[in-house]
Amino acid sequence: MLKDFLVPIHRAGWPFIAASAIVALGLFLFFPPLAWIAVLLTAFCIFFFRDPERIVPVRQGLAVSPADGLVSSVDQVAPPAELDMGTQAVTRVSVFLSVFDVHINRVPCDGTITALSYHHGKFLNASLDKASEENERQLVRMTLEDGRHVAFVQIAGLIARRIVCNLRDGQVVRAGEHFGLIRFGSRTDIYLPAGVASLVSVGQRMIGGETVVADLNSDEPARPGEAR
Image (cartoon, rainbow, N blue to C red):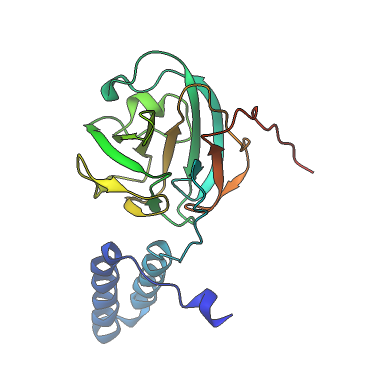
């Protein structure tokens, strides 16, 4: 049980935690009634930037979720034009992250980063379909060993105003590795190769780096889901 509470904190969170803690200390010294608000803010920052260990399935061909959250849509759409992946419709799985989800983004599968594109845009509700085209976003194309492409996109939302992506062009990455985060509440999309179906359903809770989104080496059809 102790391990469940003592979760590591991502390094990007320490400036926020330190700043809010200093404010809390100052308020305790000069205006105690307001200090508890700063204490709650510090606790929220610790909670938001938690970075739990994940057990990543490492079988070749598996694509894992790039984020924690709920599957908000599974659609057949053309890949983002910025990534030069053609116009053929592929499966896109969208994962919506609330402010209570872990916000660390993870690489979905093994491969090489072959394109990066940042698009300045709006800050609409990230759960809306049009957020994929209109919101501020970071787009990434990965090339697999067999030459196929997988794309994933970090999308800012109503509250999220800062996208962090630590990838670089030509970088070789492995499934489950950290690649960035979004502050504070957002959405992450993954575009699968042509002909690959999703193994998750709308409403399903995802665990970044652990939940298998698709088997890239299988022709298994999409799995429907229902609440029970």
